[in-house]
Every structure is written in C-alpha cells, then in structure tokens.
Image (cartoon, rainbow, N blue to C red; front, side, top):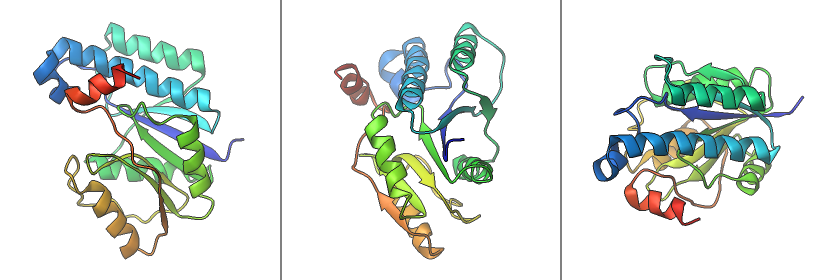
Amino acid sequence: MSRTLLIQFAKWPLLGHVKTRLAKKMGERAAYDTHVELTQAVLKNLTLSNVGTVELWFDQLSADNPESQMLTECCNQLSVPIAYQNGSDLGSRMYHALSYGLKAYDNVIIVGSDCPTVDKTYLEQAVQALDTSDLVLGPAEDGGYVLIGARKIEPAMLDDIIWGGGAVLRSTVERAEKYGLTYGLLEETWDVDEYEDYLRWRAI
C-alpha cells in the first residue's frame, strides 16, 4: 500500500455557490463550468502523479446534476473513492481529513480543487519535505496555501484561523510553532480565485 494519501477537497457543484469571485466577472454559469473543469484538472494531476493513493472529498452531498454525476463517474473510472468533509469550518474539516488519513497512511496531503499548479513535481517535493518535517505547506501568492500535508498533527492546530484572508499561511505556521510541530515550506505558487488567475490558468 502507498505510504501517502492525497485528498482533493472540492465543493459540490451548485450553480451560484462555487467560484463566486469569478462569477462577478464571468457570470454564474461560466464560473460554475470553470469550477467543474478545475476539479477535473486537479484530479487528473493527482492521479497521474503516482505519488500516492487519491481520494476526492466533497464539502456536501446535494441533489445530483449532470456535472456532479460526471465527476462521480470520472472518479469511478479512475478508482478514486469519494468521501465527504466533516466539520463546521475549513480548519476542522481539514483536521478531520488529516487525522482520518493518518490512521492508515504515513503522510496525508490535502490539495484544493482550485490549485492546478500542484503537479507531480510539486507533490513529490511535498512528500520529500514530510520525510524531515511534521507538516508541509505550499504557499499561495494570496497569503494562503495550495496544499497542506502532515505526518503528525495536533487537535487545535487549525482552529480559529480566518480562512480566505491574507494571513492564513502565517497563522498556520504560528500554530505549528505553538504546538511544537516542525514544518517545511515549498515554492510559492498560485490558485484560481480571481479572474486574473483564471486567465493565467488558461494561458498554461
């Protein structure tokens, strides 16, 4: 069995509830379609990397629609299990996923579905960092991070962080230091939140 679990976090595709910042520029339908396409792109990156076992975790289970059925079928074809996030905010959901995965794997890495720059090389660097550190973080240009990985965690490590703000990475590093966890930082990259990010992704 692989020693690393790769968990992709994704929002269930619901029109008007995904990629809301993009929707202000593109409209809700185009933003929705972009969300579905990004989710597939990240899933492809993770499965083709051969870095670890891959699972896709949705934030909720809602009414089926053609796009969610397409994503589910894509997972079935790739033998990627689907699970559901558990927790009141992003921090508690990530903690639950990390602690769940560490029961069976040496390392667990969570990647967001808006992070198409997380490729095979980046994932390999994350796993390598976990050989010597308790945590690994992939910094994003907006002050957050595109991935978080762990071989050891503490229950309150991700509590009371202002998710979506510009201090997410710094706050997480401060928490790690508070609880005596070592960490490694990868090269800074970007995710697709704003329209300019969308254009950059399209230009790859």
